Length: 192
Image 1 (tube, rainbow, N blue to C red):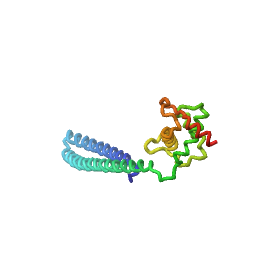
Image 2: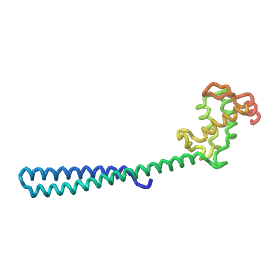
Image 3: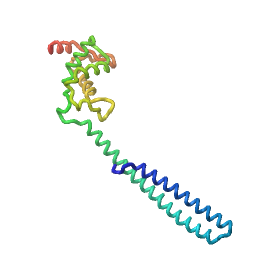
Image 4: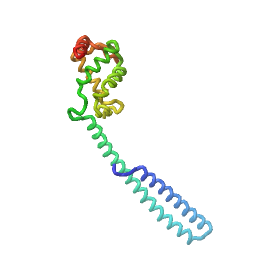
């Protein structure tokens, strides 16, 4: 959106309309007093002035409505642009992030240190510390789909799924727990 802050303009319209309404009330009061005191010339002037100010108020109200419609349309465009930007944030060119396979040995090593299994959050925390020198800056960026989740944590969870498929991790671990399989122990032993 190009505007600095469309709510400031809306607030300005509201303040202007309040002041114009106060002016109308004042002019009407003057006209009423003039009529009561039988000063018809002054009452006529007040009536004309009230008509002019009322017409001005109607123009300002119409401009306020036009502004609100413009701001709403700009918000819709901005929302679409923001959505497009957000969806593009998730797409990286090949090689920008740490490859999924790079998580295999750290995950296996952490699970071995933890006695063969561990809760997801603790495993991921330890994997993050172990891979600190390996992870790239882009790996520390939040996911567009879930800004509370860092890219590397998501990648480690995808690596876990691949490792289950390859028989390195147990597929039947309790929910929220990762467990190393015999093939994973053998891979870790072979890497040392």
